[in-house]
Image 1 (tube, one colour):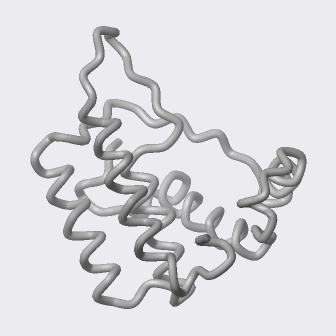
Image 2 (cartoon, helix red, strand yellow):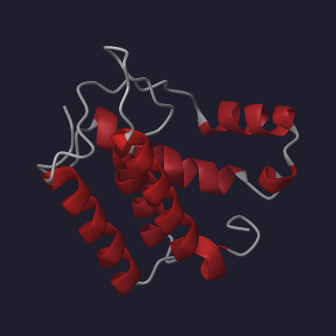
Length: 135
């Protein structure tokens, strides 16, 4: 849905992603360590940011998602101790996506992955983030 019609589904998809990630963060665990593929932080600083920069999200939608994110991290619900960034080029990511042959990912193109990669690079490598970003 998102990749086929991002203007229509961008906000709904990202709101659902943030809710799902918040629930995962909040789930109690008996183990001393919880490992997650993505966090609410990458949702906000990479995926939401990318949708806004590419003019898929309107300003009000961006502000709603950011306000919700700020509320979740300010109450300690989504605390992180560490993030491990598995850095790969957009070209490598596209090859991996194509090799998976998932029908919902067929319309992902290199341009989308390049802008998403830029958001990750700014967040992790150039340390461009706000005070609520984890270390």
